[in-house]
Image 1 (tube, one colour):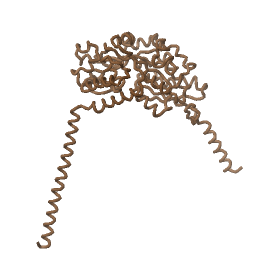
Image 2 (cartoon, helix red, strand yellow; image 1 turned 90 degrees about the vertical axis):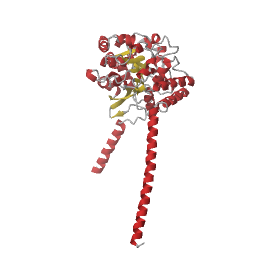
Image 3 (cartoon, helix red, strand yellow; image 1 turned 90 degrees about the horizontal axis):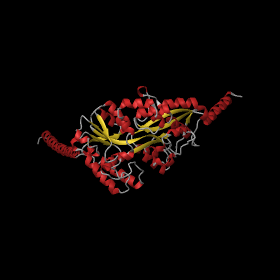
Image 4 (spheres, helix red, strand yellow; image 1 turned 180 degrees about the vertical axis):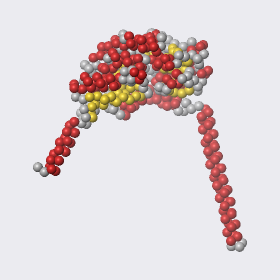
Length: 439
């Protein structure tokens, strides 16, 4: 056998081995590189225990658990690729444009309902997610209004919106009213923050005016827009995660935000306080889901089950600060002690008031529901209008006009000078030419 033939057979064997050992995902199976599956997890920012200051690194712990106990069962090991988003809408559009790139996501209730209706979520495998038994019954079955019978989601955290304010910067008579109206108080112009997402921003105006946050009437949303336009001139800006730094450093004085986040902020700035507005407020549930186009569904189900185990659930609840639907967390002494270190009133803030009690004055359901396509398009258009046309302050228009006038004036002046200089040079050249010929 010649050396060339031996080499050809060797190369063919290598190529054949490569083809069979590397999954091309044509059968929808795991996205494997060698014998390692990359599990793509997409979550909110600051929404998982990540090893900071000695806390449990949840994703690293899952990798170790899976690779030690489950790799032989599934025939591959795991590497978690963890990325974050700022809003439900950001997450939705990313999945809609890059379907199949994520394996575990943690949207809010109304977005889960929307994604179920659009066929974007897979049904969960409860033969794997056995720790679901530890989820409180108040989040199961019909109580999961956004996902009946929990076919597509497992609750991760829950809570309610409230108003955070700085007692050193806000007068007592104003915050004692415990109203959404504090966000519209002209006295605090330039010190008020608002959500940088349409659902919560519109919600604050609609709770304040006792309007249905799930209305199908465009005129209702138009009225809410008018209220937000009125508020705009008092705002410092629209924010999401930036609220932490702005409120803890006292660069802002008032902001709507979530009760769990308040506990973390108050730990850093003792001047911060919190209330649930008397007019009513949003009750939300964030839950773990698997996109329908996930290529690693078994590993994704294992990840969700791991997140429900006691050590992991407690670490995440302590890190996030939101209320937990997991009974293992509520019965855990480490959790109680850790939350008490954040704030003396942590239990009353997170668990002391039910959604019904917080919404006694509100005439509608406090939970966000999925919009119809028509209302979604209308709300998106209103939000775009608020953030562009209606969001620009008068002084910006004046400044812009002044700049434009100045530019035009400079251009006209430049043309005039050029023409004047050009005529001067032409006359000079003509005089010099005449001199040379003796005229």
